Figure 1: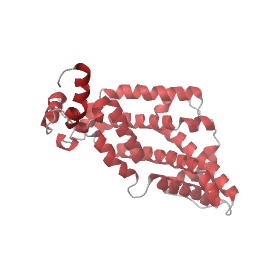
Figure 2: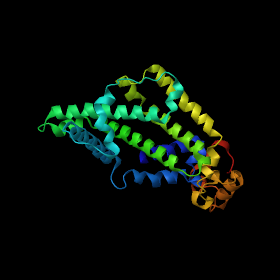
Figure 3: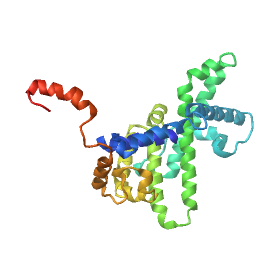
Figure 4: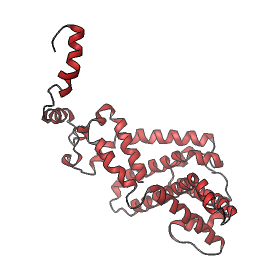
Length: 281
């Protein structure tokens, strides 16, 4: 999720155009500050490797007759899950279903765990390190799919426990958007393994765009719901009242000598202009 958050910040910067590159609007600072979170408590790549190793070890325990609990309990039914090699959905709207999304991610995680477990087992102890390093990209891919699956399950549990049922429809919409996003992010895996076909892929992409359009009108209220004050945001273009231009001009004007020519002007720029035009700048 911290990787995803860093991607969101970069998307925010691009969506705001040139204004987001200005230090007045804080996004560059947020990107710089947040980058360290991807290594806090352990670098994400290392944590993903640990997760993948746990998944493969868990499947091995199942094969030895043990019963799993918690986030990897679905591997108890790995054979039954993989008995279905592709989705059975016909209506594209079914892709908005939480159960359909989780089933797809469950299948993908079980598939990659089985495949990578077999590759590492075939390498044997003598070549274990080489096999692990050779397959690191796929191992991280496995951990990513598993993490998204678990995240969406926890999200759904959380909104179902929400006592204020008036907010449930909106929370459900956001969950559907995240679910579609997760499928879109892993489309290459689903297409490679044959779980989805080209028609499904087009439907997923279109559903994602449709959901973004539908939620756009609610974007500002959803952000306002966090109630983060302006003095914390420190960005004129993020003003709570939406009146950004006076605040923007005020921030620029408040800077020391912000409207004066920069120090290099008279030394480097003016002489070149004077030489070409014959005037004095």
